[in-house]
Length: 218
Ligand SMILES: C[S@@+](CC[C@H](N)C(=O)[O-])C[C@H]1O[C@@H](n2cnc3c(N)ncnc32)[C@H](O)[C@@H]1O
Image (cartoon, rainbow, N blue to C red; front, side, top):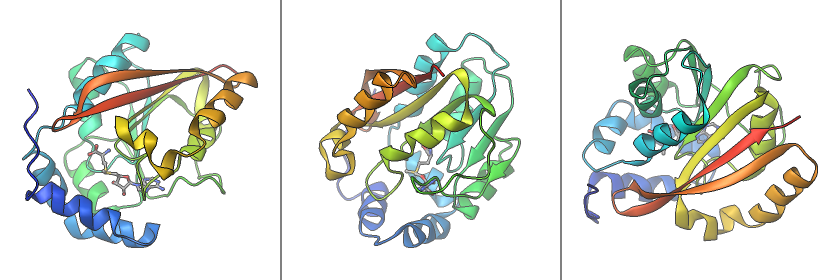
């Protein structure tokens, strides 16, 4: 069961700090300063999003050996949950924070790590059609990754593969998601992907979540 909100807790302070950053570099510095403490902090509250996302991924992806790229991977909590539901293929992580990545690799959660930003202006170093599927947990949020980069994730995933993005539901009402529905409608109209959004009861403490599911169709 989810815990109640702790408005004086470590994660609230961290979230305020992250949302107060003025650019991506400053944001990455906050994550680097946190390092291993990030996951310790997350573990002090209930973080149901990765568990619910893994269960949803399991419904769509039947191949146990499927490969995954985890975008905004952090220390790899999502990878751990995917293993628990039976995925045993190669997982790679992508995240600009080297300190979080160090922790992820120390815990053996990924085969390799890309220290990069996903942006809407430039392609990252990963080749087109590389991964069977992509997951992203808690990274398409204000001050972090923009929804316009979903086009870039659809480039990296194989045709027929899925992109799963888990967010706090009410982020869809923020400026960060302005124009999102039109963006998704256009992708579908152009036949690039199929799309559905699945409600999950709890993303983090008692906040409801959403898993955005894109299937690459061409
Ligand atoms: C709230 S943390 C979530 C980490 C992890 N997925 C989890 O659930 O524990 C958000 C992550 O997104 C990463 N991030 C922020 N902007 C990014 C970008 N443009 N491209 C890739 N990752 C980014 C941060 O470095 C951070 O590790």
